[in-house]
Length: 189
Image (tube, rainbow, N blue to C red; front, side):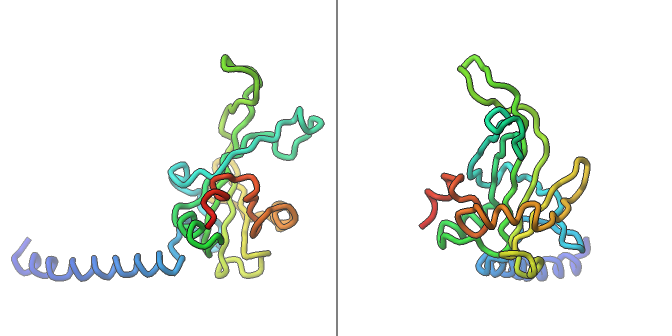
């Protein structure tokens, strides 16, 4: 690299870094930092590294406790993006651009060397919900729900009657089942 190019790079690089840091700081401060990536149609790409997010709880609705016909006969391991969890701890609210991922896991069986119960089996996929005033202004509470068909790169937005209706009727706060997530309840200010 010539001395001129090196001097130019060394002079511009710190300015670029300062600009990027400033934009990042503003995004975090405004609650706009995104943990999700979206298509042009505002469908959510499959979230990356969601298992490194904050685990907020798990539930299971087995068929044998629901007359053989549970709506969701599997474990649901639920994660919230780290920025939204930090916001929750400060405000007790779900910020704009909150992403919550629900990992679906089959029920393997009811017996284990440790005793009887319900034990997780294989991963069945994920579902997610995203709160965004900008992307989903006409959705109830600005929440959109996504199902991720097997092999799809992004989730399909679910009809409001599929997920939102139940969340609106039964969720304890802002369409989120906080009553089932002890981590959220404990962190709420």
